[in-house]
Image (cartoon, rainbow, N blue to C red; front, side, top):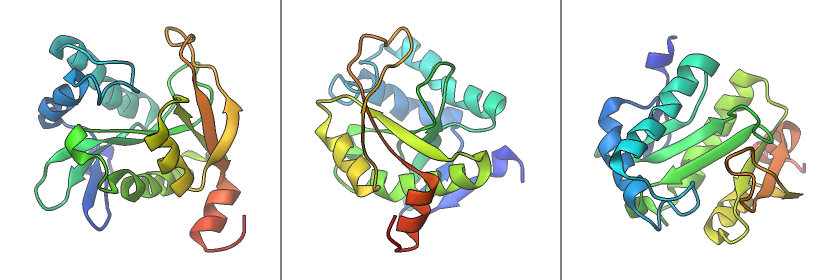
Length: 184
């Protein structure tokens, strides 16, 4: 299967590679000060376009990146989620960001397990992390629901080296045991 054909479906969602048509909603998310607060801050449209191109570029160069999260019924772009590891990153991250109108509907905890399963099956990762700002309680709750625990403080590479960051995560063994209903 080619990357262009990669598609994961959950009960309510389709996870696929980013497409140009996703950009309008992505730009809205990046322009929203509250929605972009934990992902580097809001951006004007031209800067959002450059950032948007990171994920398709990651897929082309690394063979993985965050999936676009699409509402299965409406086709609406809800956000991005999945594996992320730019140069200098503190670990194999499973990250996400959602458009404000997608908050509080369980989309992150529905999409991310599918992306974790994909990453562990296809990338050979033995563990994964979530880089979370200490004040971001909503993302900590998502991490807990995924079975991740606080590993300690983290350090992001420049230009984010001064941003406070907590590392949450788990091992492949812990994830697979939890998925099979076994003690980790």
